[in-house]
Image: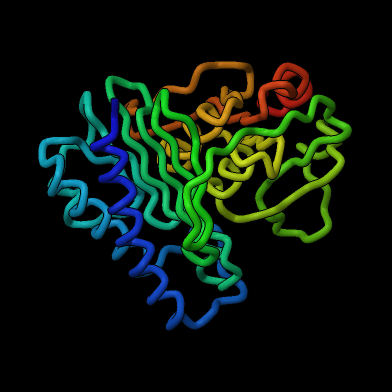
Length: 270
């Protein structure tokens, strides 16, 4: 149904990934980079993505993180909407640990139709189209369909979360969920891809507020891989609202763990 949009998103991600890779190779690491950091590579990546999408779909609305010329000249909301995070996890880029991704999503009438998450530093691509499943391609390999895990007990689960500013500190999410294993990364796109690929079982975002571009592309990956994505009280997430705010938090799981994880994580959301 959304094959043209999928191909456009894949091509835009490829072009951006190539440029990011070149910038990453030249970049001087910033070991103490903070969460709000933005780089010229973010803005360059966004312009490449938005211009590429506009060639194919010139009247579509655009929603993206960085303030760039193409975004400023575009319509920001509409029935056909592209939601873009040009470098998700910029701290991972700035610290040069590879933990960053390119996230591109297409939303039609409020429903996610396409999601692409590319990890340039590791040549990992995960993508999905509504009704067409979730797929992964690593390196130069052929695409392989991916599915969420079949873990059914939280005590056996792998939780993925952001890196703590205080290494070794146990997060409230870990205290609540008591998983068997924790995998940390700066990028929400990578976290959602890990769940979709069956390499992690749970991702919980308990921030009071974040934006559509932080999660939209990864949301459909998990859904099409057979998992479940909701707010922290089980709400359906909505995209394309004013200023692209998300205020319900996020819980992404393999589905089997969702009800119990909601019970344990909801109190953290207030």
